[in-house]
Length: 452
Ligand SMILES: O=c1[nH]c(=O)c2nc[nH]c2[nH]1
Image (cartoon, rainbow, N blue to C red):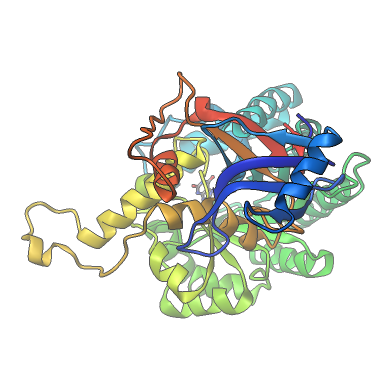
């Protein structure tokens, strides 16, 4: 149901502040005609009853059933849209071999617009059904296929940030799949920005363009420099991969004599609205630089388990005050579900803290120090943290923010949540949702108040 201009009576949860869950118990959420949250009235507020009765009298009140809980829609900070056919496949080789042997050949197929439309339609529908209301997408080098992804997101109503991938380094990119020159990479980037901004159906800027150097190994210095200038001129978001594996981190140290973060900063690519995927091997200085530039990290716990050779120190980054959101990294990660990735983030944080080698005595198994996060942090980075990383008013139920939301039906018989009235209450319900919910439990999804 379209909730623009309506008032929703619901219970649910959000986490505007890291480590804290705000329980929304029988609240009224007023949504304006443009799909933004106008006001929130809590049960017990002096005017609660009057407002509720008035909305009911005019037919503007919509009430969620018992056992259903409202959450902010998920913000997936790292998705490779063209890799969807490869989800759950080819996870047994190192990153550099995976790119050359599996991923570049697949991405090269998006020359074919019919194939692109088919895959992108499936992906956007599946992500919406999984509760992802905002996605930050890498597309491919192809202009037409990337435009098709923009069109599909606008048609289906998903909030999306989309980049034409720039990759022109002949040393690291195959002949059959790379931008023909630095000029071609830069012109293609500008053309996509113009297409998104001038799209007749994008008056609300639901889709935004993103400057997208694939990663330093794939790009020549001329392209990195030119993309930094475009980001500055156009005021665009930026996305790239950063210090993601031993090989990649070492490659940049050898080529530029500095870390990815230092190099990206030198090219003007670290800004508010820059999202660095993975970022596993950041130095303390890198973290300070990212914080100073107000850039963000997309934590991709499942993908990191396969390709990173390390666990991103999420807790340290959060405690330092970096912007961090969560990414599925389709298809480096084998799940399109942000819930599964939230669970992955908790799991790997615990392994980082405890250490994992059973042959090492318990007293000395841990080599890292405090790293463990809980469901509160995982929920925060999957929602409000992602919104803050993108500097967009999404991911929390606060007046002025977009009404991007999902309903978790905890009683759905094909779902995987089982609540017991005599023991489950308060935050414990959210904990069970984070640990056990799956796609059948997601009963409704709204973006900007529109049902999608
Ligand atoms: O997980 C990843 N997926 C990719 O497509 C990619 N390209 C560079 N580095 C990458 N890492």
